[in-house]
Length: 393
Image (tube, rainbow, N blue to C red; front, top):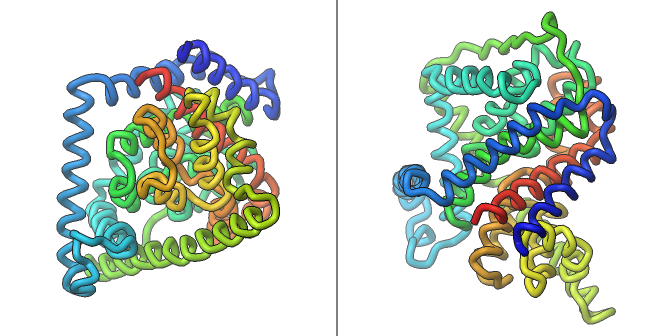
C-alpha cells in the first residue's frame, strides 16, 4: 500500500508543478525521467547498501571530527557554557558554523572548491538538459550558500533573462550551504542530511524543468565566473571567520524571534479555540504528509513540522523534531528529516532577493516579483525528495 501512496504522491508533485508551468510545450521529459531515476538510485545506494552506509558514516565522522575541533575554540571562549554534557544550542549548534566557514574559505583560497564546483556542474549539465550556468550555480549553492553564490556569477546577472534567473534562485532555495550542514547533523541523523543534499541537487532541476522550462541556445550557454578580489591568506581567513560568526548570530536572532512569535500565536489560538496554530497548519498540510508516505495517525504532527519549516525556518522545525516536542515513528522521522533539509521558507525569498539586488538592483526586483512562485517550487522539491525516500526505506 505504501508504494501505491508514494507513486500517487509523485504524480501529485508533478501535477502541481505542471499546473503552474510557464510553457508546458517546452518541457523536456527525457532529462526529467533520467533525473528521477538517479534520485532513486542514489537514494537507495545511500540508505540501503553497506557501501552507502560506509560513505555516510565517513562523512558524518568527518563532520563530527570537525565539530570536535570547533568545540575547542568554543570552549576557550565560552568556558562552562560550552559543556558538552549539558549543551546550549547557541554554542553546540550555531557557533561551529564559524569554524566550518573558515574551512570553506581556505578551500576557496586554495582553488579546491572552485575546481570541484565547476566540473561537477559541467557533468550535471550533460544530465539535466540545462545550461552550464544553471548547473554550476546549483553545485555552488550547495557549498557556498544561497546568497554568496550570486557573487560568483555576478557578471552574468545583468543580461540574464528572467526565466534563467528563476532557475538560479530555485537552486539556491532548494539546497543548503555546507557551512551549516554540521549544525543539521547535530539535530537530525546525518544519513538523512547527506541523502537530502544529493536529492536536492536533482530535485531542484526536476521541478524547475517543469515549472520553468526553456531552451538555452549554444551561444548563450557560457559560464563566466567573477574574479574574486586578491587577498592574503590571513585577510581571507579573517573575513570568512567573521562571515561564519555573523551567520550563526543571524540564525540565533531569527530563532529567538520565530520561536517566540509561534509560541505567542499558539497561545492565542489555544485561548480562543483550544487548538494551536501549529495544529491548524498540521491539518492543512496533512494531505501532503499522507502522500509523502507518513502514516495517517502521524500526518498532523508531521505536517505541523513541515509547515513550521516553511513559515519560520528549518532550524525551528528540526529543534522540535530533535527535542521530542513532536513524536514520530522512525520511518516518519526519515521522511520528515529529508523534507526539512532545504532553505524553502518565506524568509529565504527576502534573503535571495536582497542578495541579487545588492549586485543588480533591476534583477533583484525581478526576483522579488516571482518570490512566491520560487517558494512554491522549492517546497515541491522538498515534497518530491521526501516522497522518494518513503519509497526507498
